Image (cartoon, helix red, strand yellow):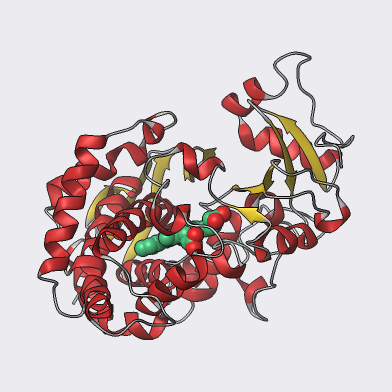
Amino acid sequence: MTGELGRLPEPPGLPVIGHLWRWTASPLRLLEDGARAGPVFQVRLWRPALVGYRPEWNRAILSDLDTFRSRGSLSGLSPYLAAGIVHTDAPEHRPRRRGLSGHYSARALAALEGQLAAVAEARRPRGDFEALAWSAALVQDMLNVALFGGALPPGLLSRFLRPLHHGLPAPMLPRPWMFRRVEAAIAAALADPAPGSIAAGLTAAADGAPRDGYRPAAPETVKDLRVALAAGYDTTSHTLAWAAWHLASHPQWRDPQALPLFLDEILRRYPAGWLGSRIATRDCMPAGIPVPAGTLVLYSPYLTHHDPSLWHDPHLIRPQRFASGRPSWSYLPFAAGPRTCLGAHLAQLILRTALIPLCHGDLTQSGGDPAVTAGITLRPRGPLHMRARCPRR
Ligand code: HEM
């Protein structure tokens, strides 16, 4: 391989600036046009990139951490994500990830269910509410409880997370002073962790015997928790806002038992992590496509989840399509492989718990703009005005 990209189809662009203007104006439209051109296509951004969305591409890119690294990819553009486990590549990724995964497993999180339910009840919407504001405040509280037993000062947390609500470039701008303050607050929470919190589990692990030869150092744990806050916040709160919105128009799914299927479908239709990226470390042939070392390679859960050859009527909300399970490599709301979302179980627990109060009483949409908008994560353009009436006792 010469280091040059081969001739792959491209979506319509302009001769000199390529696709950058379309990327900035409407990245989803650009990707959809690319997908019509072929299963792997090229886009010319500030650097050329290859985008694929078929299951065989997803498997090739996501299962081989030696060939496809995270450092230097798009996540490195945001200081919120360019640290901790997100910024760690093979071979260090594996032991570091093992040291974290157990603390975010469904089993470890079961102990938090009661506390999270109490937060959801306290923030249950009554009367008119705006779903994006409600979900943001609720997810912020729930992450604080799950990670730190609620010990992080809420005002500081909200100022730290605020840029993630705004479009680009806000989440890309460096905020060294704010990050230092949040890291100091996380370090204080780790020094005297709330019993049952994820911070308590991580502190115990740091004090105990190494696991798989790995024992996290305190500064690494602080960074990992800071990254978890950022990675878990807008992803989960935007998903929750969409779920509340559609729950109002799909009353048959307003049943706590049915929420897991309903959420599977919301995460398919609106995958907050709509685009993922890696850098090829060597010349390689993922899914039979020649890729030179150094190429920016992208996978798109959004395109995969809307591929009509994989999903019937992909733009419709049909939770029952998950009744027979979740297909691997064609369903990627939390990515897949060794870098699959660390917080997937926590996100699902938060989403389920937050929606249970909305299963009872009346819930209606009263106006707004749910159009899909892609920034650092996928979000409804908003606002989403809704009305909730609690059941009579
Ligand atoms: C609905 C909510 C969420 C969605 C849709 C989501 C989606 C994703 C996706 C697609 C990735 C893979 C990115 C890539 O490498 O290309 C990822 C990674 C990650 N997520 Fe999530 N996420 C959610 C919630 C959370 C929560 C609640 C946390 C933590 C508290 C979290 C922490 C992380 C971390 C640390 C990684 C990097 C894992 C690694 O590189 O090993 N996420 N997430």
